Image 1 (spheres, rainbow, N blue to C red):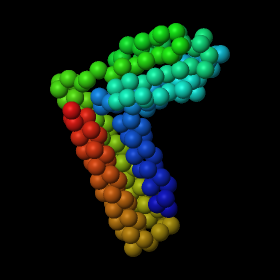
Image 2 (image 1 turned 30 degrees about the vertical axis):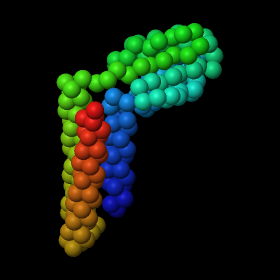
Image 3 (image 1 turned 60 degrees about the horizontal axis):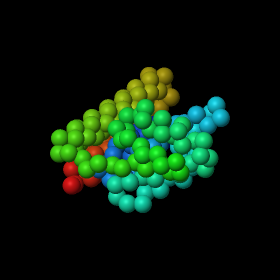
Image 4 (image 1 turned 90 degrees about the horizontal axis):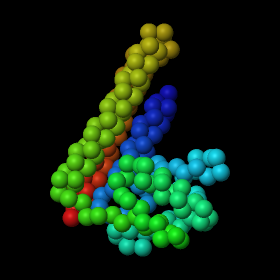
Length: 181
């Protein structure tokens, strides 16, 4: 009964994790490219599937497409994205050099992290509300007893508290990562 709501909460946490990975924290992280797609023979394809993506040092990502014809396509995709980094194309590889984040930019990113964390908490609470509503309906239809309903509501609340704590921990961890110079 409760499993489908637990699964939904888990998906919310996974989604938050993906969003946090796409936020750059001053260090080169290949996950900032996860949402970018390039046109590969008419098919939108992730950059990681058209070439090697390497992080040789803390501030650089090197993308080496398997086909040199993809260099310009990858470069355009990065330029038109919201990453905010200008790619350097030397004819063989594309280098993304991550500049040091300013204090102001770090604070902006930390605010963004908190916003995404709040959105995840709201999503988890909405899942809890849906679960509670479904248990109330089941009670009305006499599909479960009042004791069963009370047990399920308690389980859902514990699950909600546990997942909200995980969101808070993820937000704290990402905020520390961003604010660390």
